[in-house]
Length: 436
Image (cartoon, helix red, strand yellow):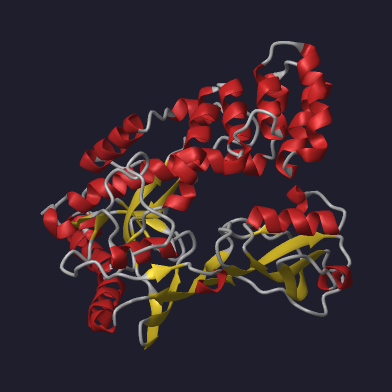
């Protein structure tokens, strides 16, 4: 398998493959943007003819842009702030994506008429409120796998059937943690209150391979940030014209408030900081899921003290004991209500017994403290939630033309298509059958 994304033991320490009886299937993916297509399936559609509704919802198709980049381009083109634009889910830059955005008090005709590089508006409608993160019914993926030997087509069918029947481990994919785990490191620094370290890491993450030389604008901003001289901070404004757009507010704030690290942190968009914090939650979840997979019965086994959730709706309940335990296991086997793992936060439901011990150990291994999470300023402190350990891919179909395979499937909100691809290609991993 070649996809440009590999599991990283630093934040994904126990990646196991449940299709262990099937040898790795070789293929190449993401050789071009069109090889990865994803379409959001929203919970609700915008409607026409509701002129008194103040929020315009619009479907876009973006190519090679992250959701944040797309939101930024739309906001700038309409003379608005990025924080005003609503979206249901974050999508990676590598691929062609259709998703909905929303904006209040905007001319629908102006939205429909946007002409932006690598982005087009497909349709507009109105709703009575802003589109919120998580308002998704799922995502439909359309992937092209190349150089997949025709003699392995039978194995491909076996693997996909097993994942649909027994469940796909709901790991967060490596892109969730950033290149080399940078997003998680940023989250650690932020939660610890290491403002200078956090800001340095954030600025450094914007350096491209050709920008390591000292005279580059990003390197110059780093040097100013390291300085304890007010004049160096004030001089940062002069770098603004040559910096990436996301660093320009930092440079201007350094000039306005020399040596005030806390004000610089506040300057960063709340969505950006929340993404860094949520990478820590994702790392804890992955550790818990890895632990559950090596236990007898795997991640489908319902244990006393578990909290069960519907993988598609997130609706949950404590695992019943006594007469209800057998029925709970049946529901888990059918992938209708499965054991969950933690997205840590002070308000998250707590498990009991052995399950709770595993989750406490994962928190300790991630060096994450619930009190530190709860003490984050403003709206950054995550409430916490539960996430299904397994998901069952739906509407799985594939067709082949020689060594080129077109693979389509639907996953619940928050599940990663790249994790399914890793189950097929098994890059440098361990099959579950090897651990039991």
